[in-house]
Length: 113
Image (cartoon, rainbow, N blue to C red):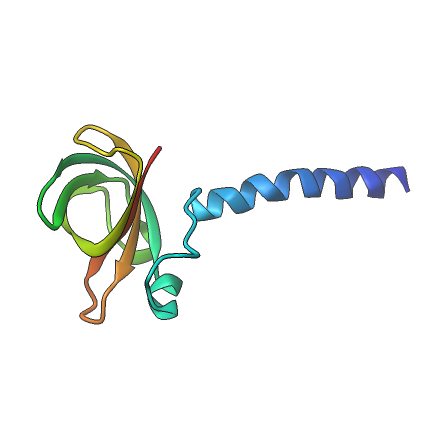
């Protein structure tokens, strides 16, 4: 019985951090996106190289969910992209990429790490 209680306690203790890591700390509940977009969203760690008018140039880690290797690229920013923190060039961030109806990915949210 003590083993079962200890196991359940350990499981409860480790589940919360694992769930938090799955969402990368982003609160998606108030984002104005369709449920299909939210379902297909992927997260990636990246360094912001520059942020322009409607685009961001980032160097991101591999994104296995969509078959992308690590690379530097320009990504469009959705008009209502949520910026969590004062993000500028050189910052390490977590990106939430959303697949549009055209099959292309855009940044739906960016959060400082």
